[in-house]
Image (cartoon, rainbow over all chains, first blue to last red; front, side, top):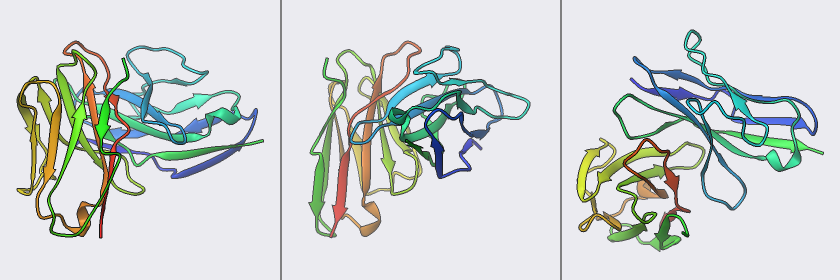
Length: 109
Length: 113
C-alpha cells in the first residue's frame, strides 16, 4: 500500500533557526517524491521534487531509500516560510498523488 | 495563463441536493485530476482523466459521484443526494502528458447544511 506519513501536524521555530519537516513513505517500488506548499489564502503549489535535486527558496530534500524518508530542510528559516507543507508521492506508471496529512510550519519573529 | 480554474469557490447546499463543480485545466494539459480534502487531512485522490477518458477512480468515489470530461478540456464533478460527509474542499489539478508535476486550482469548498 502507498502511504505518506508526516509525523508533525504543527512545527514552530524561530526566524533564522534551522527547520526540518519530516516525511516517511511506504511504497513497494521506486516512487517519485514531492513537497507541496500552501501559503495563507493561496493554492497548493509545488515546492520541489526529488528527481530535480533543486533547492527552491532555500529548501532541499533528499530521498533516503534506506530509511524511506524525504525530509524537507532549510538552514535558516524566514517568516515568509510560514505555511502548510505536504509531502506526496506517486508510483511508477501511476498518475495520482498520495499526500501526507501535512505540517503547519510557523516561523516566529 | 491563469492556471487551473475552479467554480464555484464555495457551495452551500442542503443535504439530499445534487451539486456540480467545474474545473478548467491549464490550456493544453491532457491530464486532469480530482482530489478531496477534509479538515486536517491532505488531499485524497478521487479520479483522473487523460483527455476525455476517465482512466482511474478511487474507491472513495461512491455511486453518488460522477465525473466527466466530455471534450477533453473542462471537467465536471457531480455529487447526487449529498450527505453531511461530503462536506470538504474539492480540488482539481492538471498536468501535461510529459513527466511534469500537477498544478492545482483553488478548490471548491462544499458545505452541507
